[in-house]
Length: 599
Image 1: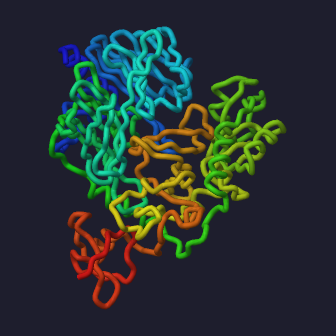
Image 2 (image 1 turned 60 degrees about the vertical axis):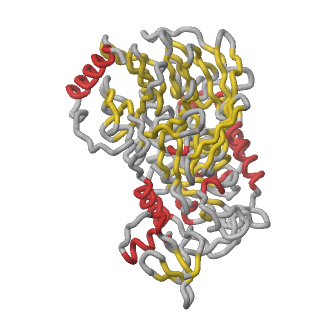
Image 3 (image 1 turned 90 degrees about the vertical axis):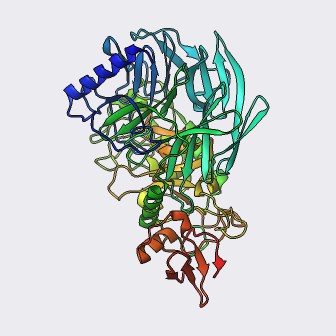
């Protein structure tokens, strides 16, 4: 990096230290391969309301903070999504580009030598600005590519590019051209296959891993890899950025520790034109940008994540003792059809929507638009329920106003829409609004094993691999918590989920189809509305009533805290099961245990 960057860093540190009590220079324990402590710290900003502080917001699905960033010879750029602006730090100091007039929620950013490119949530085009914030031309998407198809925008090899969720790459040169497809397969398999221009590379990422392609340039391949805690129907994963050569040989790893994170940027990794890698992380004391060292050995947090996942499982899950349907009689096809109807419903804003009844607050799908504008997606409405998508139009055409994002007063009369649990209640045709507590206490934890054929403990799989469309993902903290959330699962590929939900974290506050990355989903429980998959034969295998995962069982009974993977159970001579580590005996095989062997 040029000397200019050193000047920038000093300036940023001084401003952050002078304006707040943020302890930017606090010494941290170095953990091998950690992208913050085993790295060159580039800059840091505190969260807060002041001009030189970055916006932060507690969200229902997950928390919101800066979504994207860039580092080049001209400076440091941070997409401050919550405050709807760009922060630029360079030798001239700090500058800000206000995006509030043109963006509902800026989602992705990339930077060229003289332009800044911004992709807005639910936008229909890519906006461009010069470094002084002056709007330049807008760039439409490629034909047949909508916002929901775009994984990220990037600037590489002197051209603006789009990467889709299917890893199709488009390059812009006064018009869009499809450059190539990078097909990445092998989620939850030890070996992944990456095929580019008919050349296939085999890459070993280890068990219980899913991967996404971050960068392919020259002889360097960078994958974002999530390693999931196995055997439990709770998402807990460790995210690493891994560098491989074109022979598939590992050259280095850096860990992005998500345990202390308060939010996870959509673009947490940035590659500049010199091939340098930068990482942005959000912690309680602020936003850090670092240049990590890639190591062939690194400190793993998997044992700690195993403890966290098992604690969540013990607190919120209890397997049903029956194999009958537990929540809905709707088929998966019917549920998805109802979900699509809610996400795709077109309705027209009326003047009354801007003046909701006392105790209610209009959603952004109203406030970001004008009377007589057409909006897509049933609006978020706290505590509300609908028996059909068209019922919203009937109520709204009467004296009901559209939506309510105020969660402090309960359901407010004469407001219409769906909140997150109301949406799932609607999709499952439950007849009334059921809260997240209901879905926490009912439903079935998705099997972690053989997908319906044979013993559910028969192989080393993660529950996410066995999710089926219209199963649900649940975060439940307490009955009164505003952080509870529920989503309907559609699919999973390349480290990205496709889900339906009603949420206030988008620029529209409505029912929509979204694509959260799997590292955004830590702490979510994976459940099904069916004890038997909704069809016969049972698609999830045999469910057993159980109490504790074997690792926690051993920890509680004998205090042994050796590695998670060393604890297995064997058939005891007199019946029941003994732990091979300490001899702990149980009559009921704990959920998710490894295959049994005889003593």
